[in-house]
Image (cartoon, rainbow, N blue to C red):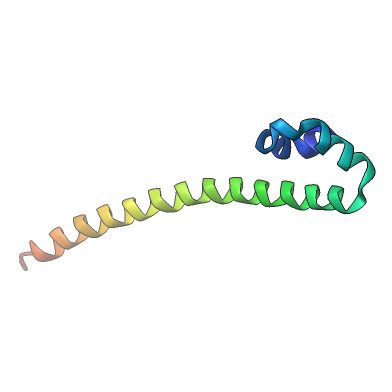
Length: 77
């Protein structure tokens, strides 16, 4: 159970006991906790993707610069 609510407990650490009681006794609260965990996990995955997208965009810009230099410097033979 703790794994399921770890991110929620990290966010609301001052209310840990209340969170634990609600998870154990309130089905709607428990469902909201599951949804919260899913959203947090998705955000973490997207953050990793965002870093990869930024890296690829920077690489694309560098390649475009190199390609343009070669295009502009092309001397027909």
